[in-house]
Length: 329
Figure (spheres, helix red, strand yellow):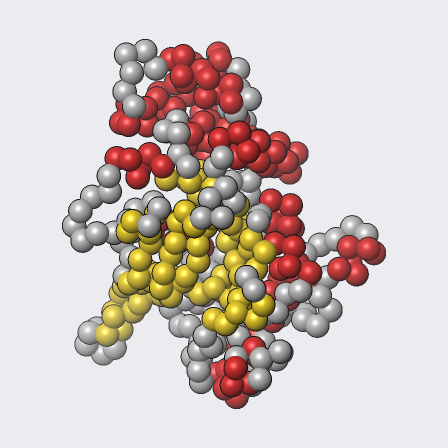
């Protein structure tokens, strides 16, 4: 399977103030700090982490809302950041995003027709866009007469369907889904997920699916990456990830998933108990940033940041427990 989008050594740091007596020392938030991954054509790549882990910053950097501090993102082998050059219209059409909260991502002063029509006006202007807008609404299972409605007249799920229709208006090949169901009622979440799966199969889409919900990733993602304080801890195929998690943080997350049966409880890791909270990204711990919460920590963990190593084919982990110096597994 060909890599569609590749992030290499991606960093995004924000200066949020100054410290010291003379206020000369910048206070820097390392929201994303050396992230590398690839999304293959036709797959759903899950990016998972707690709030503040940096996963949404990755998304906003990909779509161009932020310029990277360091590193690069390539789409179809071409860098998305080439000095002062603006992205081509063709690339902008191919990369779209569905935001977490449709209530804030849809303009309340525009009708559904105007919302879906905007990307068409920019990228594919037509004399009469209404037939295409109606087709887009039908694709997301909304009736044609919704073109005259305003966002405040719609339910949460319907708003997200409009947001999905807007994202599909330019015929993209890569769609970022930034927690697309977390702001919705549980009864609506399954409908949105099934819709996204159907659209992916129908239009051969590739997804970067950002979420904090690991149980959702089990059923949706092809591969899963875990982020913690701006860095990726572990990447694996979804089935392998849930069957054989390596990183202590991954095990902690999996052991925290609520279950409804004894059989599901048996599948959860038993080693790690969830403890502590994610530190502030303004004051990231030295060495491995997870070591203050890790029951497996060694002296080395507080002094040296581990490197990402491939433990098995397609399964990489960033932890001193698996570094060659420690003898690996």
